[in-house]
Amino acid sequence: MVVAALFIIIPFLSWYGSWFGRELSDEQVETYLNDNEKPRNIQHALNQIVERMEKGDGSVKRWYPKIISLAAHPIPQVREFAAWAMGHDNTAEEFHTSLLSMLQDENATVRGTAALWLVRFNDASGRPELVRMLSFTTVRAEESGTIEFLVKEEGLPVTGGAPIARIKKDDGQTAEIRAAEAGRVDSLAVASESRVEVGTDLMVLSPTVEQVWESLRALYLVGQMEDAPFVERYTRPLPGLPDQVRKQAAETMESIRSRAR
Image 1 (cartoon, rainbow, N blue to C red):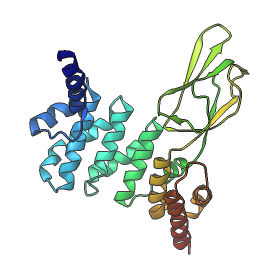
Image 2: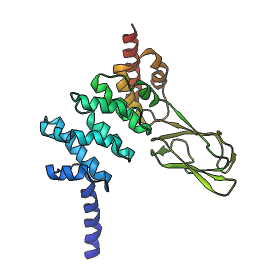
Image 3: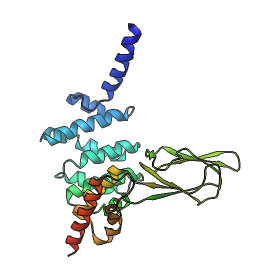
Image 4: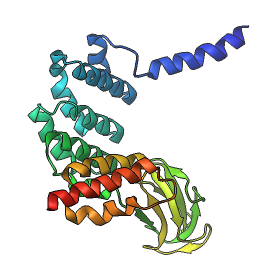
């Protein structure tokens, strides 16, 4: 009975401890925002602050300076969450300024998140990032050696930052290749266990459906005619692309044409 109880209690405690729906007191929000040992606690606090923003709770402004400071956090997922939180108050000019600076972030997902939320500030500065979010990415070898793919089938999802291949170099050492951001394997350019040289095309990654959807919605508001070729691709049937996304692409194209006229 004890063992059976542990099988229930331990997963519950693990889930409860990481569930963002658990309400936090002001003291807990303060503590969680400064918990650099547990990034998920920072995300939990940000989630609570956003919920209060949406209810019109002005008391959360006391934490705005801390949220802005998280734009420089060493963990990309925290920076991404901070950008998301800042986008929920488009009256805060300090958030606007911080999001603009995040367009220069080294992490593609953080840049994309900042670009999306800048649209709420009626700011199209992130348009190049919004277009990039619609683009397919070619992964190339940065070392010479024997390639081993860790994701070997087309259509498989890839997590941002996850290892997708290894190259065994001529000196016997191994170089790991990681995905810059989340996506799906569109195609493999070479066979696993084959010889590759620096600059060899290895695979093509397509953006996630969610990424395409959010970018199309943003470009509906700020897209220009030079963005049209990237948007138009998604008006046609593509493997794994829901009808909802194709419909949004068509509406975005019409909005872009309308602005051009």
